[in-house]
View 1: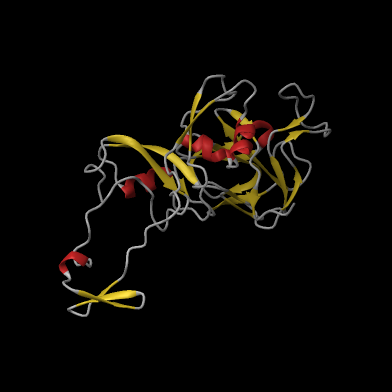
View 2: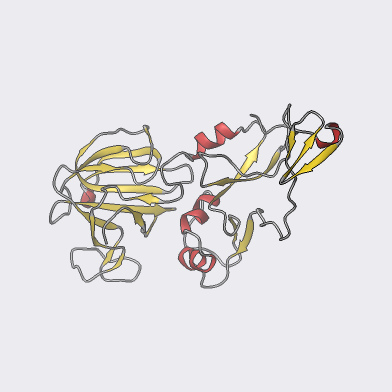
Length: 284
């Protein structure tokens, strides 16, 4: 179905439950064959329904007594001291819904910067609809058919998180962001050769050895978020390959600067490391 008839340039909310459908502000004409109370002739009451002279059941239309939820995207102006994490916490939404709704977003945020935010209570993200877009093309372009949209799945189901994102006393970690030692990702404990699944969907943008990361794979989604899988022993994908959430991309190893077999998962937004937690299915 093309959206040309309804919009030439506007905003569409892709809801998280994309497999079931979409929520957008257009009104379609009634389907052929829909019951039309005006054409049904005289009716008689019968419990919870009315019966027309042709004995066709005409269900009553229930009018809501409370205000319907507002589905319009929100506009948020960044204030001094705001961060992605603080805004997400205040609005009670995953910070990835903010990054996915604002393509090209770079950190740190600037005071006065305007952000698009999904409607409160409606999981998903905001995209711009242009002439020629269809529901199918938007779904394909933005990868809205994973198992858990807007969430990261644990790349090794059940794996224990042995080191989290942030400042650390572990001396092997480099200095970053004013801290003497800082861990720029999340470490998952797993045996050598354990399969690694993509935490989210996207396209493979880098494969190969990269200094301390050892053998690594980078996957970039349509909004520029980059997932880095490091210290791998083997890779099962290649640059340019589209990857769905949950697809196997390689195996755990201990290449690069590593003191044992494990997976280092790193998330980058605008080239800046960000906390990939929570990871659905990991062990704390």
